[in-house]
Structures are given as structure tokens and as C-alpha cells.
Image (cartoon, rainbow, N blue to C red; front, side):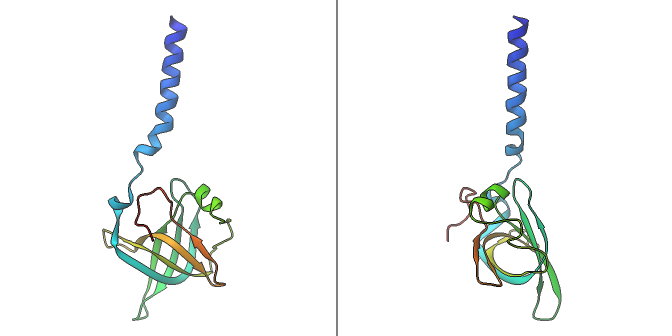
Length: 135
């Protein structure tokens, strides 16, 4: 009886630990506005291959000459890899064009959907199951 109870508790704890990261995950609509498409071109400053979403940061020069650093949320590393990405697909110093949707809070943050590299390659950047707007 004691062994069965300990087994059940161990399995329950394992399942809870596996589900906990999903509880913190947000939907597209919680942070981004599907009615506010954004298209930017800039120089990559940083790439973070992390879960649950990878991030790419670019410096974008405004019409007035000012530079703003934008953060772009993409799909998780595994989704990007299966879509043809490699860790060197986009790297600091590269110039890229990005299409996506602006953050609701007005910050320089967006949900990236497509990235075009300087050599013309187009990379899918979103996750097909994140409930974001379809293109």
C-alpha cells in the first residue's frame, strides 16, 4: 500500500512538473494585436534560441534618424528548426526584413510571422498553433 501511494505521488509530481511551463504560456491575443500588422527592416543585434519562444532583436532606423531596438517573438527552436532554420540562419550583423503584428502595449515588440534575409530567403517565424492571425 505504501509503495502504491508513493508511486502515485511520484507520477503526479512528474505530471505537474511537465504541465507547469504550459500554464505560463500565453496566447497570441493576450499580447499582440492581429489588427496591427508591422513590417520592419533592420540589423540583427541578438538572437535568443529559447523555449517557449525564440526571440530576435533588431535595430530599426526611424525617419528622423533615431534607432529603436525591436524584439520579435518567434516560434520555439524546434518549430523553427523543422521549418528550415539553423542557428546561423539569422545572426547579429545581418540585415533582415520582418513581417508580423505589433504588441498591444505599444512597446517595440512584435510577433514575427515571416523574416526575409538579405539574400532573399523567406523564413517562417511563427508557430502554426499559437492562435495568431493566418497570412
